Image (spheres, rainbow, N blue to C red):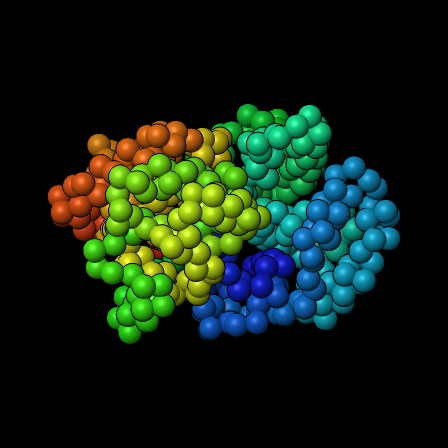
Amino acid sequence: MIFLTFNDFEHGSGGTLRMRGILNELESSGHKITLFSNIKDKTFLAEGIQHKNLNIKFSRYEKRLFQFLMTLFPLFIVDFFFFNKFKNLKYYFTKNNILGKEIISFEYLDNTFAYYLKKKLLISSYTNDLHGMAPNEFKHKTNTNIISKIYNKFRFFVATRLDEKVFSSADGLIFASNPMKQYYLNQYESLKDKKAYVIPYVLEEKAFKQTVDKVLLEKIRLEYSIQDSDEIIFFAGSFKESGGILNLVDAFISLSAKREKLKLFILGKGYMLDQIKMKIKNASLEHRTVLAGTIPYEELRTYQALSKVIICPDIKNTYSDLIVHLKYYDSLLSGKIVINGSFTSVLEINKNENLSINYEPSNIEDLALKIDYALENIALLNTKYKKNSLLSFFKYSSYTQELSRIYK
């Protein structure tokens, strides 16, 4: 089977890790995989995967323009703006005997491109992996004035219309949960007869083999002046509004006077970075905050080892009620105390807080209370949750049968 993504896999985002997990699990199960992508470092791909380098990249502006044009304009307009990219992709497909075949596409841009390729008769059919919900991002944006409100409503309309066009033309759809599947079937009548597969966000095999690098750990401690007595609360993820990073910063600020040893350690990047810095600066807490940027995914377990508590602070939103985020599983695997929003999806597996501590999503006061509670009861809770590091059922090998159905 042929997979298409314009991702370069350079950053360990949830989407990137999902692609890696699915591809490697399929290959290890004996399937023949061809991947078209912009990957340069192929060391994390299974050796049996045949990789074709696209060398076709979209800037952030180009992605938005392409998706906007695909939503509201005829194909010849899209051709005019992106002629060279389409010409190059057609060349790669012709060279590798892909024309007229089926493909599986992974991310939002990839899914839209698959739709384009089918409309141009370059492929026979496609299956979309729906592990994100673009309209959800715009629906939950904070509107600072009437202009931003109108703009976000327009973006929500465009994203919803594009989803309907792209998914309605697909041969099959891969959902990240059963509730997510039902949500889309309720949203779009045209999807009811599509082939449907359910493959949750889970962890790839390599995640279970990560260990703490003691040399790197000591280097990090020295670089950021971290002491054993410091109460490190930790976040790793994207700096986007639905990710709740600003809520976490606010909770940290509210607790900082009470807990003098409290420090906030943040990994990641995103468009809200300036707002994060401004909040921390206004609270005069730069000396108790670490913004460490992005790291290789393989180093995550070492960075997590610095923490006393790991926070997954997503705000209240539809998407998080439908799926369990990958960062939640990764946080559990650290064996640390984890605080996560009490979303419907999480409550299904976190019975009686057996895996983590719940808090009310978007409630900064409740988040601060739960952080304070965790730090006050650190020994007791460490004993309760230390066996999380032994979890083995949240991985793609548990879904081999469902993955194989895509080929039938």
